[in-house]
Length: 271
Image (cartoon, rainbow, N blue to C red; front, side, top):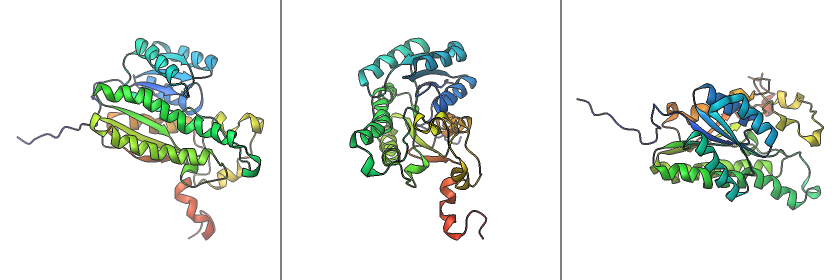
């Protein structure tokens, strides 16, 4: 009889995804929550937006619950995780979507405190979420998955002095944790969304408006990504179908990263 290899990184095929999603009230986080529940999983939403978080949890029904909190507050994160797990069971997945947008400004006009605020929002918040929630998933020894959110500007920098470096650091942190928790069967991957049609693209500093012409010109598919498309990629990485994938940075960007080198040759129609 042929021996069958056991995959130590795969979650039990019969288990349901039970995830805590930070930044779950809107945008990509909300799309992830909807995808998980639609596939038969359970989700705990963690967000500072109390009204939005509770409204989405009510929409998703008994397989979802809301926890209002700040990813930079580790004690609060732990209390929120306790609350979520008391309602939907032990988490076997974490998705780190929390973060605030940055409007480009030159370094001469941008205080260090503002730099720190953006970096903390994305990098420190991801670290704290992984430390509090990811660590308890790993400690159970039953496998699991973590997905962090990087960005195309974390790979090819743009004029966002804090957001780009923070997202590059998130990708690095993801690889470190993937190796650190590999022996526990916890897979850790990052998704790098391209320009995605969420409120994040239209922050209050832009008064909710934006000219997408240059963005579309830099995207080979010539359209914005939709939150559900990013959510599909994240759901795959959480699932047993991705049992051999850990430490990866997965672009979901309409070809932005692949197309970056085409402009010196005349654009996407060259050749």
